[in-house]
Length: 395
Ligand code: PMP
Image (cartoon, rainbow, N blue to C red; front, side, top):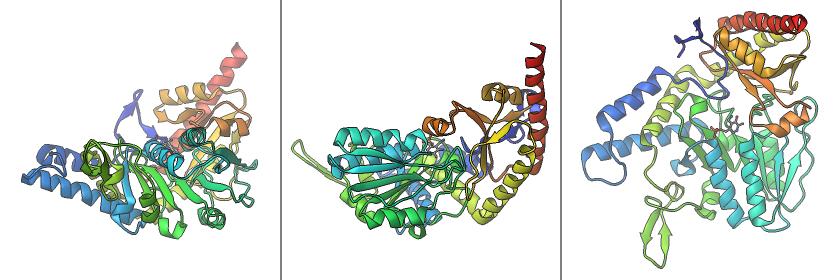
């Protein structure tokens, strides 16, 4: 991908917050598995099946160590962040929410950490409430009422890049006996994550945003809480014994993983973890922070450009608008110069409403993003804004 051309120009990829590019190691691990070791796991007696099963579980233990989970049983494979949160919200709606209970979601959530909780509240009669955000894009935290059962907050906001104070939120949640669910889609792969140090109860993320494949994600949960929750999806692999009268479920993590799993994807995810560890997550974090300050110096002088939010701590992404320039026009023109950025509401319509806009554009970084990428983006941005403004004058 880094040697690919876009509209005849070398690709400048600044959309890693939407999906991360996959390293050669990830592609090769998946290709090698599919070429030499492909077999159904957990089911068959032949050697390739056993080998496939081992590789699949090795992927899980790599993820366990990446996030500091106590045991592999706390790592549930899902199809992505959205799937993780849907699984969790549906189970919590059944087992833990009653009329009068409250679920608190922050004002900066991606739709995937909002809509499943709306559904859970609708199904259970609980009430959905909003943790407000100030003009800088920081959460405004005050004590939660005793009827709070769930706080669901992103580790890093996908519009403002705000790094939320997860340890503090965990303490506030636990003070009232609530569980803290963290949407870590924008955090994993960009900085070291230790779920025990964060003290969260659940942590959801996607393989494809951390340089792994699409179609796989993770729901981390404390073992004692996962044991309390019922599965909401049934089928093969997640059961112990089945009769027409009753079914007993398998132990964690299989209880939440019905059906033939994503074997090649789990192996690719394991390779992504190796790749991140080889570079070092501290190094990746430092690198993205350097790019962030370069991006600030490049964007701030531009006439009419507004950066959404000035949070206390920002991760490697910036969303902007430019007066009189439609985000889609800008993104389309940039694409003509080989520059890939995201535009639109970024699956965060309430956040757009908070800033009084209907859409914006965003640049975001990964370990492979270079200073030169940003320089090329800067040149293309000036050209594109100039062209749009000139077109308006001529018109
Ligand atoms: N949460 C956040 C903060 C995100 O940025 C995204 C992806 N844009 C998601 C959740 C959803 O991730 P996925 O589409 O991989 O399920």
